Structures are given as C-alpha cells and as structure tokens.
Image (spheres, rainbow, N blue to C red):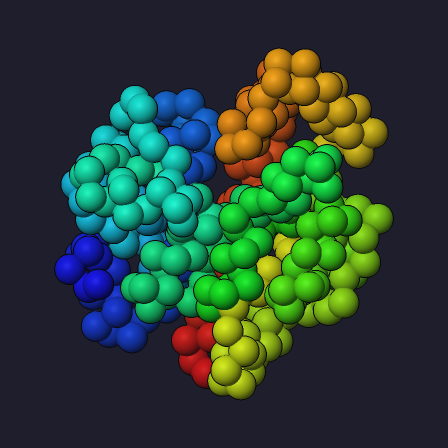
Length: 303
C-alpha cells in the first residue's frame, strides 16, 4: 500500500516531527473554480492552515501515485490542467493504474488521508442524499465513507442543493456524529442555518478533539462531520439562494442531468445565476473551515 503514497517534503517533515497535518481535497481546485482563481484560493487555504500551527496536505492523484501534499509547482500544474478526472472510491484504482491525473472528492480524500495517517480534513461541503433519491437512489459516496473511514471532516454542512433532511437521516443510520461548531442547527452551505437541529454542539476545538479521540479510542470506526457555519458577513440571503437553487434544479431535470454530473452542473448554474456571488461565499466558507479544522488538528495532536 505504502508504495502508492508520495509525501511532499513539507508533509514528510511534519510526520517525522510529530506536527499536526490537515488534509485538503483537490476537486475544489480542478472542478470547483476557474484558473487562476483555483490555485490562488488553494494557496490561501494552505497558508491559513500553516498560520494555525498545522501543515496542509492537499491530496491529488498524479503519475500513478497518491500525492499527500503538493509542491507549489504541482499545485500550479494541477490547477491549470484540462480533463482532470473526478475520483471517488470506485475510480481510485483505475486512475492510479492508468497514471491519469485525478482530483479527489470528499470520499477519496478521506480514504487517502486515513492511508497517510492524517486524522483531520477540511472541505467546503459534503455530498449527501440528492433530492428525489427515494426513486433515483442518488446518494453521494461521501456518506458511506463517513460511516467507515476514521477522519474528522470540517465543512459548512451539506451542499444545499441536496435533501438535507434525508442526508441527516442517512448519517444517523450509519452512526456518524454531526457536531455543530458553535451552532445548534445544521448550516446549509451558503447560509448559516437550516430547519434541522443537531444532536451535538461544541463551542471549542478542544471539545471536538476530545470527542474524536474518544470515538476512535473506543474502536468506533468511521468519521465525524464538524458542521461550521459560513461567517455571517459572507452568508447569502436564504430566500434568494433557495429560489436560485430551485431554478437550477428545475433546469437540470429539464436537461436530464443526473448522477455525478448533477453537482458540478448545479454549482456551476448557481454561480451563473448569482453573478459569481455563490463562488465568493464558497471560498469564504472554505477559508473559515480551514481555521477551525486546523485548530482541531492541533488540539487532537496534543491528546
């Protein structure tokens, strides 16, 4: 297994010195925003992780290797490449075998982080149960991964294009704790709140770190969702964004968009309909998650 992993110099040194490491996904770079904004944002998020006393490990598939941390040159090349594959659990062996360039989703980043011994992962929003899944069975692999892979995932909730109620039900069935960071309700990505109450609230990084340690010490495999609301000043108006999401979903149905194409389509259409404001919100919440996730990683590393 280990010969598939390739650590950046910074991450390798961090592991040798016992420093906390925070995993970052690469789909947000290759499929989340255009070049050069994607590379600029990725570098800014990495710098936030460093500023909080942790070491960033952006994960991607390149040349038949799982890269745990990218050099500046690799990040530039990755962000500026066409046709990068979007890699989930089912795709990972094929992308490695064919030496194709691949961007890791939430599910695959969790897999690779666990293989590399990294316990914390910062992302924007997790996937979930899609609207209409009771007939389509369209459920993100992220949820199944959270049930079995022991990595803490800091996010701004599930993407609000999804069925948040069914997503919470699925996570409950799988025994995945959803911990609200300084909130009692599930944040809905672009907005700070939703109608769904959370079972657990934690007001400090230390409490979350203690919770994760207890979970894994008890042999309870699987991850946890740390739901961290978008900062107030960056949140979007709830009615405005919900109306736009509803329009984007209607258009995707009319265009017969389904499966793994639906999320990129919807996020892209929402960006167009909001004149880029949704992307600004996305960047802001990822940066906020990087601050919180890094603090948890530092605390967990001391336990």
